[in-house]
Amino acid sequence: MALITKKIKGTEDVLPKESYKWQFTEQIMRDESRKFGFKEIRTPVFEHTELFARGVGQTTDVVQKEMYTFDTKGGESVTLRPEGTAGAARAVLEHALENEGLPVKASYFVSCYRYEKPQAGRLREFHQFGIEEYGTSAPVADAEIICLAQSIIDRLGLSDINLEINSIGCPTCRAEYHKALREYFEGYKSELCDTCNSRLNKNPMRILDCKSPICSQIAKDAPKITDYLCNECKEHFDAVKSCLDAAGIKYTVNPTIVRGLDYYTKTVFEFVTDCIGAQGTVCGGGRYDGLIEELGGKHMPSLGFAMGMERLLMVMDKQGIEIPDFDECALYVATMGEKAKLKAFEITGAVRSCGMIAETDVIGRGLRAQMKYADKIGAKYSMVLGDNELEQGYANIKNMSTGKLTKVNLDRRFTAEFIEMHTDDENSGVFLCR
Image (tube, rainbow, N blue to C red; front, side, top):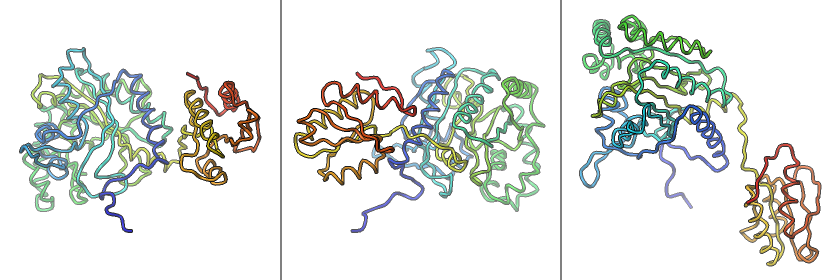
């Protein structure tokens, strides 16, 4: 029988046998961000289209080409979020989170949606871990979130991930830079793509971010923003670098980094690798001091970053990093007979109440099939219950890797005996029984 449908192009399923990798990575991100004082925020998967048009920028590829936008039955234009920052900023404004004290520190895990050509490391539905900080203009805040990103990368065991930083200035110094870019690109109008020609007068910096090979080649010799920074922006950038030096964070200044979204100002940065091909940016972020004002609020300097979950996991796989699977079945109870099934139900409940994974047959398999299943799920121990075991009041627990049998009581002492046996293994955790 043919399937009715399959997954949509540009999306991926995270299957049960792979989900532990995501959970492991997410937990490290939660742990590290908590150490830096960030708490989780959750925002809707869709917002009014205007939020992204104003916040992300009308001249970006995201807004011009990639958003999933549709009209509701009520006639409202809504868009599936293409990134996490705009929604977080909207929530900060709407709920006046600044009244709870500055800076506002928030982290999130979000699914994002962009209509672009799917390829390795680039999907139409993708997932990000993000950090947002509102209410500080201090250079040390820029360095601190970079340190947070570095600490996550280090905890994940990644290597050959290089930090590249830049400053794209403020509106004052960017005005002069835009003039220089227009003069430069005017000489290549006939060679630029239609999109870049449309950006020439509106926002020539977007040309530097064009994915066209021809435009990218032309942009290599374009003027560099670092030559046009005003004194304030230069001092800010120098202070960020000093903080990174003090923290022992290695970096390279890359004046071609502009990031793909219009809200960025001053510091921008990327953590990049070449081990997964062209889509080598695993983390990107920076400062966006004018975003809150653009969305209707008072001036509130802000900054943050986002990490692509799929890309990070690709890099971890490419580098051969082993991710521990903590979802090991501690005990599988095989049964013969109805009374044994009830006893197995009681035993598995007691083991689970101590924080361990325990399973028993819920399909009606024969004994041989149950033991094959126990082996397939990687059960550490197994036990067979039948009439004889129930009458005698004890059973044998088998260590599935060594074959060793240990006799245990089936009364109230069972759980304590099993926990002692399980925790004797140096690779086992400590479990607390409720």
